[in-house]
Length: 191
Image 1 (cartoon, one colour):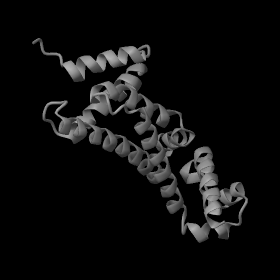
Image 2 (spheres, rainbow, N blue to C red; image 1 turned 90 degrees about the horizontal axis):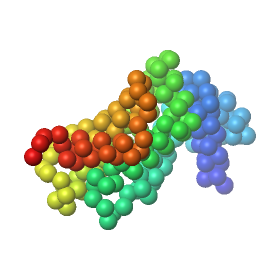
Image 3 (cartoon, rainbow, N blue to C red; image 1 turned 120 degrees about the horizontal axis):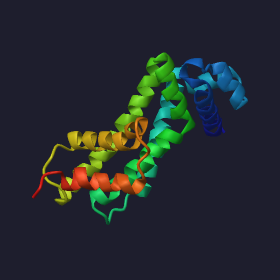
Image 4 (cartoon, rainbow, N blue to C red; image 1 turned 45 degrees about the vertical axis):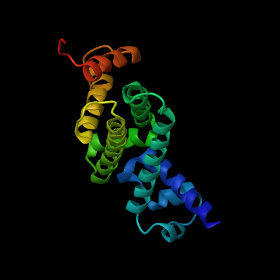
């Protein structure tokens, strides 16, 4: 029974944070959405920050599950990168919670919202770093620093998907995959 109540509170809080943002969400709102008394929330979570941390943890777990489903262990790293990054960033971009938190960060700079968005970015980087390390261990790629390589891969992908569109027409998935092949896999040097 208490597990169901806890889950009910977390789901209600997720809705509240997605709709109102971190700063404007109150325990009263969460209680109302969950259909419980405010005191019930405090039996599971001492403060709003704990509740938010639980939600961010759940979000990252869900994101990792999506990433694992996209990965084909029979394919090399570079064949998996485009679908992996597309799914991760698309999930983050379309999820109501991250949409609201992104707006809150831009509009108000709420520290806890910034921390939540940082956690998501770190989770994406850590997942890609793990996959780069696995590719290194298999001998698929040249020796490199997995952390720096993951950073470059994710930032380049974000540049193709998001930053490019600020001044130019969006790139197709096929074009992004082709550019990734050119810049990351093959490199620009004439051989």
